[in-house]
Amino acid sequence: MIAFLVAGLILGVLARTLRSGADDPSLPLTLLTGAVGAVIGGVGMNLLLGETWTELTAFGFTASCVVGMIVLGLLEGGVGRR
Image 1: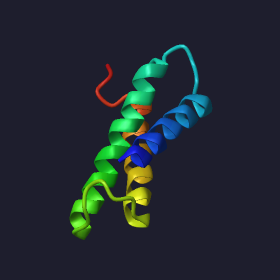
Image 2 (image 1 turned 45 degrees about the vertical axis):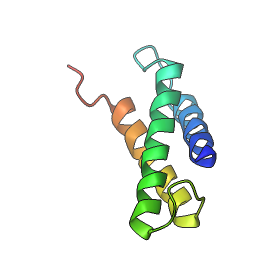
Image 3 (image 1 turned 90 degrees about the vertical axis):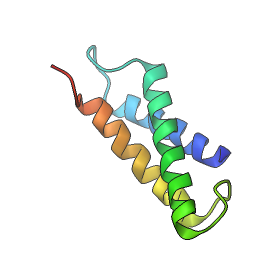
Image 4 (image 1 turned 60 degrees about the horizontal axis):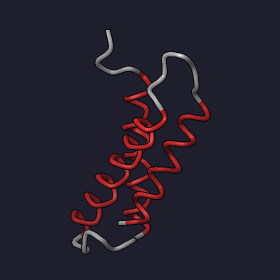
């Protein structure tokens, strides 16, 4: 579980570094969104595979990174903005 959080925070920092500008979300929001997406992806994959939700598996870690990037992309892309 902690690995998923760390992966999400790293993804948040990378997203913030790669796309920075005046209209971007704040750094805490970006970090929080990356961490939440990574935890959801990692825990979800572990539950789908029948593992314990706190266990670190290769599939769970990969899913945490992918879902974290998707959620950050949605945030950075401005889904729901007018």
